Amino acid sequence: MLLAFSVAPANSGDGVSEAVAAAVRVVRDSGLPYETTAMFTTIEGEWDEVMDVVKRATEAVSSRSPRTSLVIKADIRPGYTGQLRQKVERINEHLEQD
Image (cartoon, rainbow, N blue to C red; front, side):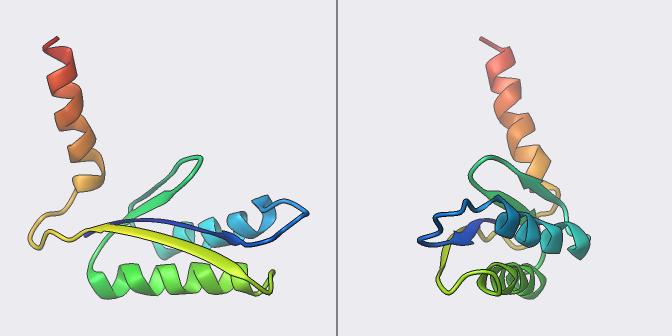
């Protein structure tokens, strides 16, 4: 499964980068394949391990803020791995044909 999520303090007047860094640290330390962009972190793995990482990343942010925002989008496709990179590679192949 691929799961993209964004977790951040809500109503934070002091910025969010420190709390978001704590969440990304949880993802990084999980050992799962991941990619962080300006708005989301996408991780790849089995349901239970991915959801555990999201939970712990959310807890890392929640420990720094009384209110937390969490957005999740998942691509659940049993039997497929390596999709974090392969999906992008397939798109790039089409673009190279132009």
